[in-house]
Image (tube, helix red, strand yellow):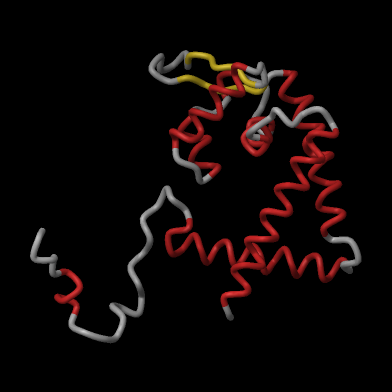
Length: 176
């Protein structure tokens, strides 16, 4: 694989993002800065006792807790989510999606389906399934080497790279 593949993937991600933002704007829900977070909340039962905590959301989304906290603060201010104190542990908050959030996520999902439908235009069902399978495998491979910021990368199964002895890599410069 050459460096062009990485550039192509970056261009694809940027074009997909821009197309999604345009589709959200056309539906009047561009201000939903975290549709993935809202969608995840919409999958939980409408029971405050079973709503996720901020940490559970961060784990589920493979995001850092401070990132999720910042997104939730904005979504709460906009009326898309609400926090409730956990009745079993008052140190924790449970996060629930509001009706306004459910309406916004419905509009967002329509926008994403439209964008994806256009992105896969001309693909056979088999090609689309293959593209999804290949992208999923690439994502999983990246998670295994640290692509998921919430986990430490596993040790390299092949050991250190060939070359100078390992102790040369661990030696600090004379100024340290």
